[in-house]
Length: 83
Image (tube, rainbow, N blue to C red):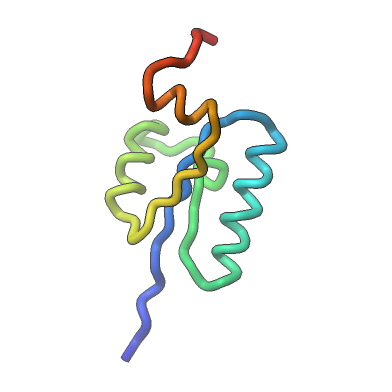
């Protein structure tokens, strides 16, 4: 039968440019392994807006990978300082 390509959405926090590039490398590696992987850097200006695009991407994904850092955890738990 035809093997369907698994969609992977990668969620992460914008800690730094270096962190963003490491996440981009992860997505590129997943693509190299045959997954339809994506992240926000590959959809810089979604017509519906970033938040709506993210929700849609998560719902449409077979897998969602979350790259959890201290910044990400604080954001999720509402502890992040302003700015």
